[in-house]
Length: 361
Picture 1 (spheres, helix red, strand yellow):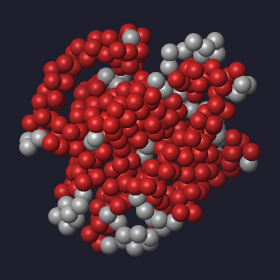
Picture 2: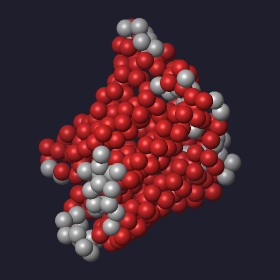
Picture 3: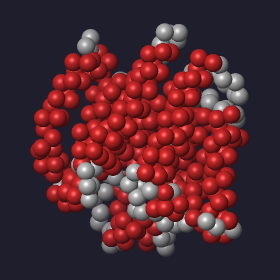
């Protein structure tokens, strides 16, 4: 490992640790955001880079039916290559991340440190979905507001996100939130939907082909699925990982709700965590479907951050709650990026080694 790669990794680790200690330093927060931008926009190679470059090249004739394709065409005809286009798009994406986190918590550095652990690495790799997911975050905010107008805005934003990456249409499932909030027995509704999805599992690919086309659906449900040696084990591991995050959040809400009266925002996020479980049956085919829930996790982090004291203080009761999330995020980082899939060499190392900044050192 060369000096540049080592230095980039070291800076990242230091920023994560500082964020946990000094939870609300605006200066540190801005540095964290800027550093995320450097690692994301400056990334020159990852396991998905060829796919993204091919999409960029394929759209240079124009006439695309989606927003991302048109962006590729416009940037390409202005003389930009894919890396340069991504760098520009990431400026807007991280401005939105900055505004979102700063508005909803004062312990923004704590949120960023957890975000560095998981799912930041995936966002660097899945560049197109990252852009779409940031738009989807704002859609979720409008879903939580729960007015007729806000629902329309949320649907509009999800459609925009879906025209950047089709997987973002999956965020439409969170429009079920009012059904869970307004019913006397949300467990019954959840079980009802889970039974329906589980029953439809054999024909889910055929249903999705109606909306997304045969080529796209077969890529995830046939080509990628066939590369998985043990689908049942894969389903259990990723489903368990997902349920672990949901359980931690449920435990957090249940504990804090005894002492804090106004937790409406946190309650909405709890219901969304429960709704997200409906995606778990899809992990049998391909774990990449977890990307929808992955986007929601930042709301979990914000909820945890909001019950912590401001600054460098940690009170004992809430310290254990935050510690659980920190430990689980570290476990998620190690398991996903070191042991699952292609491992450290293919996933993590290129993000630090194949960066414009590390190449300059």
